[in-house]
Length: 478
Image (tube, rainbow, N blue to C red; front, side, top):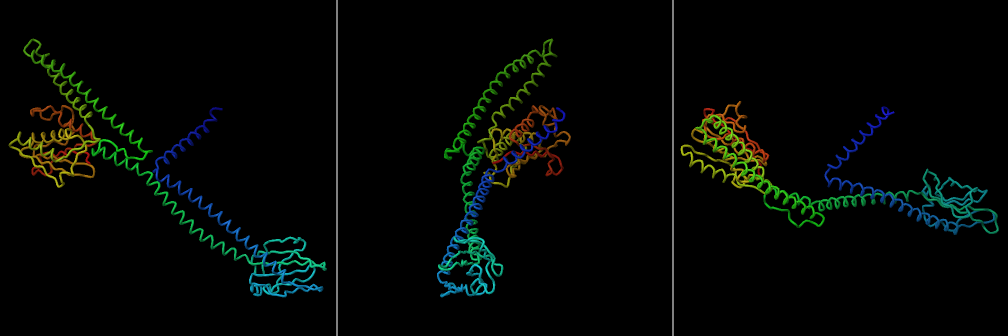
């Protein structure tokens, strides 16, 4: 039994998954599209139903008025008719409307004595209206019938008995209903135009309503962008009453995020203080015992504590960077920082010089992040370039959409393609004779990735002898 029930269970599961997928897709549609779609659908349904009902009411009113006119014509026909004992009926005065005298005009009257030939209007020519004496017409009867040329006629009839005579006279007046149809069509056309204009107006009003209703959300988006770029610290408090609680919660979230960052900084500082002291003691003890009988052990301890010191410095620095990363609200100018670093390095390396160039105004190059982090990254790269350059290095800055590209070129020996990835490893140094800890490029790589950027190494194609290195640092911009 359980085996037989599995297909139905699988089928039910697949249906559930399909329903969830459909719900997920509908939930991803823009809110304004859903609101406008619902408004258009309900507006269209209301207008179509309302237009249909109005058309029915209008036609019913026309038919009632038409029947009243027919009844008036019937009363007129009865009033102007005369008879004698020979059952000859005549009109002592013609009908008011001249169309009763025009052949097949659609306006007809007929007087039918029961058992005798009927008397009819000239418009009927030689055709008789259909009269059924088996159906009593002692009260006025309204019905549809067919005219001489296939017209659809609205007919009113009544039986009249003349005093002193046993003959029953059936008086009938029939008029073509094309007049009702034409007026109904004309009304429907006007109604269609009016309802279409009304529908377009309602849709436009709905679009305006949705636009005005959702505009505060766009204001929140703009305000969050200003918070992210550092123009303001918090969202303003001028939102509508329904939206303001959301803005307040976002401001509370920003406060909470700042508290976490400050707490992380404190913990990182405490950790740095706690680890540095024991490592420093071990290093000093190892150095002091280099001449003792345990010199080999002391040398090993000194080497390992030095490595520990490097790694602790690296990870503590990375922790500080993570804690100090405050992309929300932080920004810094690129060119002033680079020029300050260049001036400092030119003083240290007097036999080498740095050129900084860009085609963009100073205010167009803004790094979305902390200025200290920016100077840490660019300073490491420029110092490394100066260390290996023969005579000069160049720094070129440009902007690509929302990213800043900083290219640092030197005319040094460069780095082999196979070794370019290795230089980013922690503590890795391709030349042990050159002073340094081997953590510079690793720190730059880690810090740039924390900001969502990246670093690339290429050959300096502007160097005449095809030597040198080009380092491209890509960072987020405002």
